[in-house]
Image (cartoon, rainbow, N blue to C red; front, side):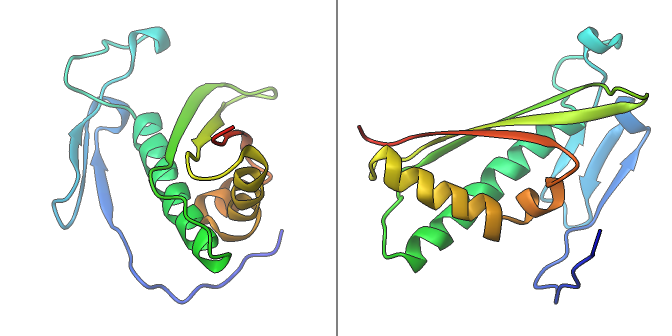
Length: 148
């Protein structure tokens, strides 16, 4: 698979200590969370903790929403008030190890479903860096709802 060189505009740096039962934080202090393995995965499921899947879901949803605003602007469309919900699941993969799967739900109250689907498709195929990173590696299913 070909890699694509980028010219970095910004670089986020995070350090994790203790893996899934530890903590992770960014060097600029903007994110600092305690982690624990959920009970469903055989862990303690400690209160006031999160998981890497939660962090991935939050990042992908935010990134996709921003990329969608960019694409809509290119087409002189308004997607203000849109809501992107990203469900990220983790589980065993065929052949061993673990993998993630994503279900993305996009609600665009300012466009018809057909118009919204066109913007969402272009966002996913052409612009969103998370979509580029997951393509071919993660099962991503997107549903779109417009104002009709």
